[in-house]
Length: 232
Ligand code: MN
Image (cartoon, rainbow, N blue to C red):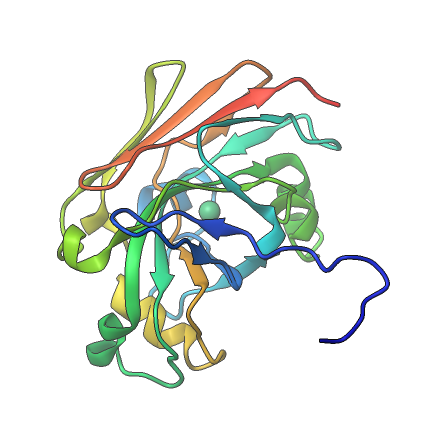
């Protein structure tokens, strides 16, 4: 073992339903504009040219069910409810037909976003990191194994804030399917166990402030919840 000057950060882990062992997170990939109605509300055109991605540090992973402080540097902190895909085996240049063999399971998650900073960056053609790579922003519920979830079909995906429905769609509304996303990402990355893919959010995104209770549900998966805390 290499002696280090200070302790290496521990990789975040996600509980898995029916397993004693947890899923250690390696990387966090996120898909942009993967529901037509959300792309429209963001004022951008939908195309089937190619999916696009941004990443979050694995250290932004936050297990659901917690209170987390309102982040610094934003006045427009948004929820985005998403289906999260957990990769279970190495995948490089795989076809869409073979892609699903590499999916370990699924979870409900939030891609929490500093929308003001994301849009300012977008307008200036700058990277989105300050808007998206927010500490504690990759919220995730326990993973359900793919075999226990079954096929991704028309399961409902929805989100409430303080009990009021804000997002309500179906996984069949995904522009790029899970198989297509895994295959496409594997053209650029040696996907590995521990890689998570946040597959994009439906329409209805919006701001939340301190005290808000955000809850997301996908049929067949554990719900994900976040309470927005006071700013530090
Ligand atoms: Mn998102």
